[in-house]
Every structure is written in C-alpha cells, then in structure tokens.
Amino acid sequence: MILANNICLGYDNKKNIIQNAKFKINNKDFVFITGSSGSGKSTLLKSFYSDIKLKSGTLLVNKFDLNNIQNMQLKKLRKSIGIIYQDYKLIKEYTVEENIMLPLKINGYSDKLSRDQAHKLLKHVKLPNKAKCYPDELSGGEQQRVGVARALAHNPQLILADEPTGNLDDYSADVIWNLLKKANEQLGIAVVVVTHRIPDNFGLSFRKFSISAGEVYES
Amino acid sequence: MNLKRFISFTIPLIVMLFTFAMYLSINKIVSSYESSINNDYSIIIVSSTPIIKSDLIRKSDLNIKSITHLKRDKILQGFKNDVSTGTFALLEKKLPYFYTINLEKFPTSSKLKEMKKTLENIKGIKRIETFSKNHDNVYSLFLLVKSVVFVLFICIIIFTFLLMLNNVKIWFFEHSNRLSIIKLHGGSIYYGAKPIINIAILSSLMSSIFVILIVYFLNENLSQFLKPELFQIVSKNLTDFTNLEIASVFFISLVISFTTVFGILLKHRLK
Image (cartoon, rainbow over all chains, first blue to last red):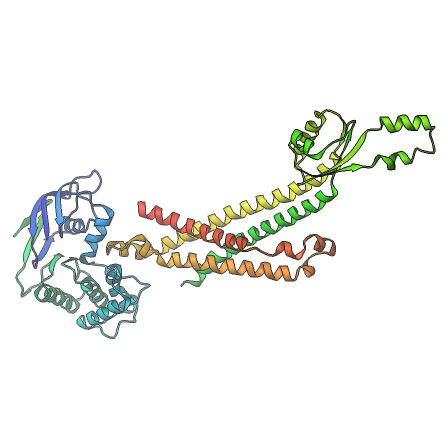
C-alpha cells in the first residue's frame, strides 16, 4: 500500500523535516502518525498524495512511484485515495450532497449513481437531512462528517486523515473515530491518521508511527 | 450560473462584435461606392495610332474593363465651316485618336501613377489624362474611413480581450479554493473550470445572436437613422449579413472567449 525507502522531505533548500524514513503500511492497516507540533506529521502525510515532493528516496503509494510522478499518474493516485483534512476543505459553493459527489464525478460516475451513493453515505454519517445544506450551515463536527463521507464516497483503498478531530469537541471526535474504525474494520480500507493524541480505549488494533527530530519510528 | 459574471463577459463581447459588424458593413458600403464611382471614372488617352484593347492589355498588364474610341468625326465637324478645305484635310490627317479607358477596379493613387507610367511607354501614345487630383481626393477619403474603422476595431478587440482576461483571472482567483480542492481529489483543471467554460460558450452565443439581431433591426429601420443622402449610399442589401459573415461573427466571439479562458487555464495547468 505505502512503501517508503529512505525518504527525505523538506521545503526548498532548508533542513530536511523528515530524514531517511523507512516504513511499510499494508492493506487494512490502521496507522496513527504522532509527534509534537512542527515535527513533520502533516508533511509526511502530504507526501503520500504528492502534495509535497520527495527530496530523495523512493515512495510507492498504491503502486504509484511518487519519484517524478507525471500529472496523469498523480491524478490517478489521488482518485484512488480518500483524504480528510483538519479544516474539512469542503467547497462552500456546493451543497453537502454535491461535496460528497465530487470524487465520484471526478472518477466519471453518472449523476444518478453519485447522488445515490452520496445519500447512502449521508445516512451512514448520520446526516440524512442535510443533503441540500451548504457547508456554512453545518457545525464543525457535521462538516467533518461530510468530509469523511466524501473520503469514503468512491470506495478508496486508502484513507489519509490529517488531524481529523483537531477542531472538534469530544462527542464529534468520537463520531469521526467510529466512522474511521468502521471503514477500516468493515470495508477493509487502510487508514493513516495524523494526530496529536490517540483516543483512549480506541478498541481496534493499530500501528503507531512517531516522529521526533526528523526520524520516523514505529512504536 | 453567476449572472454578474455572465454579464461581465457578454457586454465587452457585444461591443466588440458590434464594432466588427460595423467594420464589415462599412467595408461593404465603401466597396460598393467604389465600384459605383468607378463606373463614372475613366482615363483619357491620346494616341497617334489606333489602339486595340487586347494589344493594350498585353502591353500594359492593366485591368481594363473597356476602351471606347471617341469618334473623330464629331470633333472635326466643329471645325468644318471654320477652316478651308485644305486645312480641314490636313487636320483630318493629323488629328490623333482619342480613347476613354474604364477600369475593372477603382485604382489606388500609386497604382494610378504606375499605370500612367506604363501607358506613357507604349509606342504611339502621346498624352494621358488620369484626372488624378479628383481621384486622389476621393480615394484618400475612402482610405481614411476604412483605416479609422479598422483601427477602431483593432483597439476594441484589444480592449475586449484585456477586459475578458481580467474577468477570467478574477474568476480563477475567486474559485482558487474550489479548484485546489478538486485538484487534491485528482480532478483536472478543466473539470474545475467547467463553469467558466460554460459562461464563455453561452456568452459568445448570446452576444453573437444579440449583435446579429441589432444589425437586422438597424437594417430594417435604416431610413430612421440616416439622412436621405446617406441612405441612398447605404442601400439595404449592403447591410444584410451573408451566412459567411454571420459565421465569422460567431467565430470571432468564440475565439476571443476561448483564447482568454484557455490561456488562463493553461497558465494554471503549468503552475
């Protein structure tokens, strides 16, 4: 699923944020990436969908080699994964339903199929009556649930989540964790979550990667 | 669809297409007027030997429509009673041949000078009268009208292009968040820019239809807008658009819209 071999990440010519990281994430894994603020957790996650380029090393995600990945390949890679952001990244001009339909439409599904899938997922994330609402009309927790629904919409093999509960209250955070656990347990989707704090009594076996001083190690 | 954005696209296009329509109409009017005054314009040649049209065309390579021989009898008749029989016989013998030449196309001033030079080199031709002063005045006026309309059209095209370019840039700026989210999900820039492409297509079609309708309306009601003297020159058939001209209005409109939208799209794609 993800195979990193001595990858170095950083911005411009500054010092590397991630230094010679080497790890493997398998299908159906649930992985937490933790570390202090500015340790490079989000940078590492961004490298998985090539939002940041590798400085050196090799990185394979869903069999796509991210070294010098071409535009067409990059689109295919991103179509094959679901991403959840701390700031939700919902399109404010689109309704909730249209936001969930986005990855399906990009993947070439018909309007009807995309809409049906969006409604199914809205029920799944317990927002069946919010289809025609705009993101601004929802609370933070509800917006993030829409974000999760969008990430699941096209049945990806891999979900990447960057601080998905960072802006949420405890109740909303629990809802999001449960949705991610279900995706992993029931659908077999590999989930990689960047977080400050792993929830107590998570109730699911998981792997934990920690980042400290640019080094990634599994604990 | 954003109505404000649609209007901000359509209005400059209408102004540009209307100028283009005016440019086409004025060109047609000027061309028609050119050919009508060309019928009244002729060059007079005085030659010591008779001239045959095919010979003259071969020697001079001119676009000659017709050569008319001015009858010498009419000229001589005026002198018959005023001079003696011997003098009259000598006059009849020595009097050169007079011709008027009508041309296929109203010539430019430089072409006229060139023609005069060519004709002067033909053996037997003694004198050429091109009435160049009158010709130059009329022709300069034509050139001025044509040039002014053309320059105006080019200026408006540039102005429209810049205005639309600015509109597209603003649209991309306003939608940068949406476009970046689409990009993160593997969508192409073209997928994200569908709304602006739709606006470009629709505003091109609407502005073209609008301008064609305005031209037809003006055409039907020309007498109300023009003075009678002008109305005679701008006859109805001149302002009627041919299918090719209608197609060129649509074509220009689409080209301008698409160039601006896809120019910016390409810029974003290369980023």
